[in-house]
Image 1 (cartoon, rainbow, N blue to C red):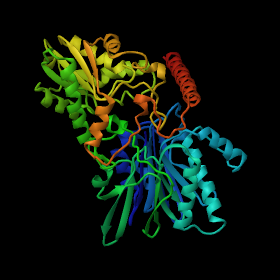
Image 2 (tube, rainbow, N blue to C red; image 1 turned 180 degrees about the vertical axis):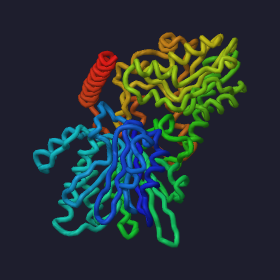
Image 3 (cartoon, rainbow, N blue to C red; image 1 turned 90 degrees about the horizontal axis):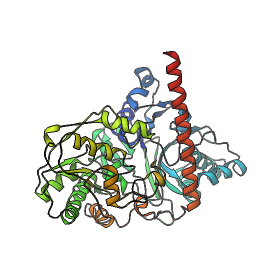
Image 4 (cartoon, rainbow, N blue to C red; image 1 turned 30 degrees about the vertical axis):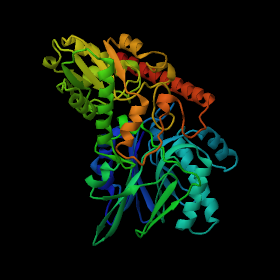
Length: 505
């Protein structure tokens, strides 16, 4: 899960890109980067941290040009973060290309080997995004055959990228001297939408991970980029598009609607807010069945993602809705943070309890999902400490039992609290009186009701059915080994830093 953005405008784009990254900050907090283009030269600034921390006034002044791309990074499956892996990435051959990528390639190791032995290209980091960039650069070189590029040649190169690359990828790229390119994998797993703005100065285009950026930045939505499609805006503002994959099947990641996307976004024609209302209504039906005879006094969301669902559950159940947790917005999302110790500490820093809403009441707490159970355990304990009588936890998502290999850095299977436990076991583990999970069929229905044209989704983290068909047990084992190694490295670095602090003291 990352945020990507690309703009072709009639004036300087640095502020547009910065503002767009702020709107996409929820999609990644590890690192941020912007590249602009002026007079066939790229200007780049990137680094680890939040957008507001990476960019200063002097950095913005060093980003001239009326075309650019931007990225905010979140770790993908099995990865450890290095400052060298902040995006966008750049290659100078054959044309000078910068690229930003949201997703995860499932065949990146094989592609690396091909790059080294056949394409004679060197990959300098562990990032699959750098692999994708070099595949694109190589295919552009072959398609161009020593001539200047045109839209037809670029689309031919993207077709070959689709042929070689497996997994999930939504991409924005700039080709020096030519224009802005964006494309989406043949399954459309990760979101990508574009819009335009017309003025006397000319037509401007913006492509982004989520539609929330369009209206906020003054662009009218045109449509989502279709699975397998590429769009190209040349430096004169000419717009071109082409379907570049022979077999496509729109299968967006359903976890985008549960947790990842902002509620004010529309992804593949489905309002995220509407889908979350629908999730609440379907989940209320299950709560009514499973807690028949139980008196519920109040429905309380875990802010912020679950609020729409909790509100709809309150209406459907006829139980008052209350805000029982106050969120400190200056603490990062705990789902993204590495290390159990950091997560436990951050939950208490992140949420504070409104005691009057819990004391002496039977409480139904609504959360978007339960991953490791660390946050849920702390939340239930906080409710009990505030004087709640009975504490029930409802999850808008089904039990998460399998890794997401398409761009979300979920834990290994052994870390999922639901990997080998029933709902009753999980309730005992986290200290709740009961845990109620959404059914997968109900979750799918919740999104389809917002856009009936959506027929298929990637639901792999719930049922282990990987939409691209190439994810094997060996691949999952490799991801888990890489993640374990990354976690060990992070813990060792943390221990070293703590020791240095002690020595300094």
